[in-house]
Length: 100
Image (cartoon, rainbow, N blue to C red):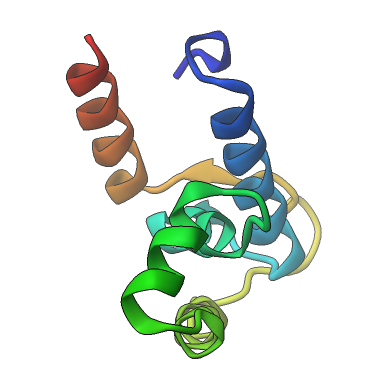
């Protein structure tokens, strides 16, 4: 994954997803982390689309956050690194293939 291949907004979303995984002490970055960031970006297109579909995004956001909270936490010495999960890596590869 080369961050330079992404738009500024996409880079911000990926960074936000990583930070969210760190905040919740998750060992891996999952698609749900990125989904939450995308639906909560105030000036993002995904949030605007969700609001048009369901009229409010707060319930949808809460459902995603509940899913994030169910991911096991990993704490203790040597657990500070977050890596992309297999699912996240597959989505990233597919996105790169589509972009080409």
